[in-house]
Image (cartoon, rainbow, N blue to C red; front, side):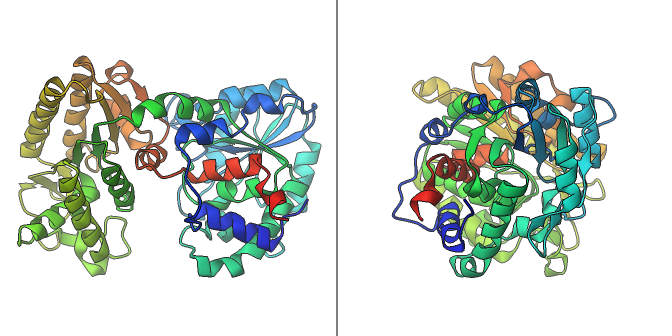
Length: 471
């Protein structure tokens, strides 16, 4: 049954957290309420099944390089092949609309040992209909085959909820309802989420389930949420670094939740916290180009409102007894080391004094665990400390990977977010230096903050037939 604009408006209000009267469930309750892959086992051969896949990756020259997210999908895809389904994998790559999944489809084909055709112009965004050529490609596919749709973010409608407010929903809901209905009617009403990393408010993860007859969690996603992620929620130490300043939202929620005792920070996140800490001392700390409005279009730019947010995070942290460990020196863009960042300068790694400080504070954390044995011995590491892909700025990240090994050798369960954190472990360490590596850090951070993961909210509503209840 097609979704109406009014039903979609109610759906999106819940996805955006605009229904304060609703009580958020715990992670276990969300996962328990969503069917798993076996619930689709009775679908006959030849059925078309949508698979929201973890395709946001950069495959390296060889299988096993840069394709951990694709490999996480294999058990689910093999299940579908064994049942003779036509599986249509779809998802995004990066944030830019011009990104293509061409190399990703080719690597998935290598992993499955069969060709995975890439269906390029699959959506008529003006009419919100599936393009005839795409429908034909799916119809002509053999049972047991796998196809991939081109980057969902090349279509503007995939991104409309990123910054949407309640006032926007009157305009957005009719188009979102039309798209969801078209996908269900013209591709498939069966939907599997096997995209652990897809925690953003993309239409493909949060809206399309509204029109589906059946939804399910893929094997990998279900296993991560019901296993290592639940344990990771007990983390008392979090290493929080990277370039994306919007991770401050996650840090704010984590601090407010009150479980974490120690936060290590580097990268842009640390810059906001450094300036905020100086402000609380009645001083100032220059961030160089990171606070220069002329660089406001750059990913490393930190707007003034983020400094305000970081200030509040530090205040909340003090109330909750959280210790923040911040850099004390930096490697600048010319390779020099400095305790200050002057106008026109940019920090690209932590310096040697910071490396020594971080090592000392890991020791202090281990002493804390001995003094307070009731504290969970769990740590979560996310991100890298600088532009580590350039060897001139890799030492901070390289050195701290060794501290992860030290933590594990001292009885701490160490969980690592995917993406750059996982790449750093591959480059500078060994798999057995940590307890578990996720394929994504953002989804874990979302859960650590106690906020519901958007796609779990969507899948739960779909499984409960929420749209039908609003008829």
